[in-house]
Amino acid sequence: MRLNDFSPPDTQAARAALQLATAYHSPALLHHVIRSWLWAEAFARIQGREDVDHELLYTAALLHDIGITTAFDNAVLAYEEAGGHVAVALTTGAGWTPERRRRVLDVIVRHNWPSVDPEVDVEGHLLEIATGLDISGDRPDALPRPFLREVLEAYPRLGLAEEFTASVEDQAARKPTTAAHRLVRCGLATHLADHPFDRD
Image (cartoon, rainbow, N blue to C red):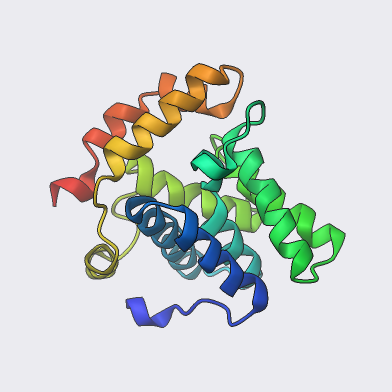
């Protein structure tokens, strides 16, 4: 498994998602969302999943944290729900059907669930375990180590631990009923500070 085994979908929605993510994310957050997509695709391959909507997965991965950026921070909604609605707006412009637009919202919201049943939502499952790897260090040995090193060299973590911790703690303080509060309560800061990728 190599980095160049995975290419972004060549579609209007995928290109727009990358443009939006690049424009509004910090370098650390941009690298995080790209790595999350790559981990998700790698998990799909390891698990032998052939029923993946790759355009949907890419679009959701690139936009799954845009709700914590200043421009798209919502005063009431959880950051994953706010980000999901950004993805709905983007994919509406790309001509997606209402059902598929709902799917991109679902995948982004579910990435913050404790777990997602792949029989219910395969893309949601893949994004949930991919972000679990990149943020909490879950399943660090599930993907080939040379592939992990190659991705991390191309998209280094930069200041992700400090930036993401501060952003989610801010979300949790302002929106205590959202998933951000659970993430903070479950030790987000500790997981990020002691992430296995930062020890290698």
